[in-house]
Length: 399
Image (cartoon, rainbow, N blue to C red; front, top):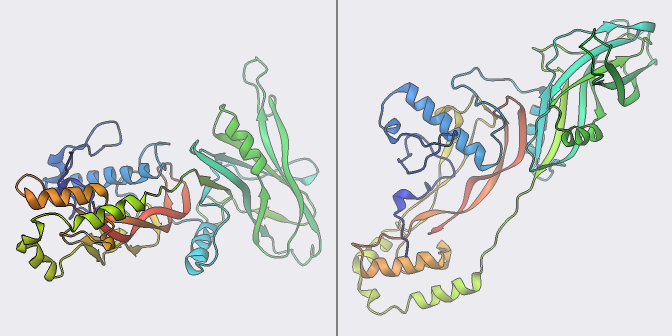
């Protein structure tokens, strides 16, 4: 029977802080290797940053959210999220009775720095560029292009005038010739179009679901160039300022394919019943005294400030949360409130007979709840995840 000491199991908290971390075999470094345990013993700010970045990589890989780009460098300045993403987070954080249409919402920013061009017939053309990279295991449910329209000071003159806004994809065709001037091998494919009536600045959205599905099937490139055309009726532009919170966004809604697993409780309840009938086990007075001291396995408060562990540069909201932790001793007899496994019951009985050979079962989280997070993934994409699983200890038990 394989018995693992509590010191080698996962910590009784859903996250690991530097102060509580213990060296463990197989701590991955994100490149197929392991972290040198000596890093944990060196009192150095550089080594601590390296450790925190390694733990961050492990943290994201647990949820299949990394591996799509280079890791963010420690100590980078905090990124201000787009206004729309912050509104999304606050909406569902303040109203837990509602939930988004998808579990994961990503905002891809415009990476083109070219300003608008006035084309034939006075049509204003706004070039946009998006690098839309998504994990293969996720299912896209919908997508939209969000543009912040700027109605100029002459809005009274053009009150009641509709502006036709059309979104095109710039498609490049390979003719087999050498690259020519801009437009020689390019064609505009219409993705969405509608009339926009506006007298004030505000957000407008255009459905991009079909385009995103098509892009995912194509392995040509994750980078896609768009053009937004605005008719000459009235004066209206879109905000493309890279430093502004109103810059164009490609919003993609997706769900990850994860499932829950349930154990067989009937057999477990039978073992709990048989546990108390063990011959000669009732005489271990030391363990009984520990029970009387109230040191049984239970859930304790643990509030985590992301700033304290150096993660506030990539976790944008919330600033902290109540994570809880599991602490205490798994004592004989293991009762239902500590939800022991069959293995934990066997280990406890063997420990009572030969405590010098076998350690006790460990008090660890047995049920974890999710929280909502607004964060930067390792490609710099501001991402909202409604259910970031495994973040809050809901129940503790013996394992």
